[in-house]
Length: 122
Image 1 (cartoon, rainbow, N blue to C red):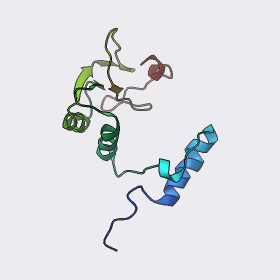
Image 2: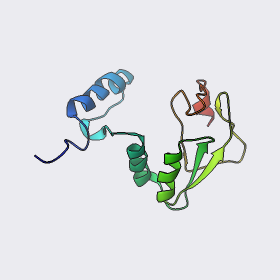
Image 3: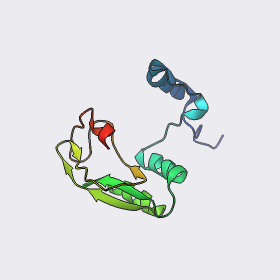
């Protein structure tokens, strides 16, 4: 009785995510595969716990969400700032990372709109 609720998120909301976003694309998931988080930092923390190893390299846009860099550093990852233009990352040959932080369409804080081919190129 003294808890905030289901730590995975409200089951009806998780099912709505499946129904609205996954099933129309014929992607399979169950409620156990879906987590609703309270904010960006919490989600970055969870992803970092799952995927990062000490010394991993993460490519981030410059400027970027400062709290993301703080979370990654907690997991002993190294962030490399990549310059941006009106479309997002300026991709240089030879740069690679374990993870590359991308937003779906609009970058923050510069509000760059990413063209459809952008994510495939990265």
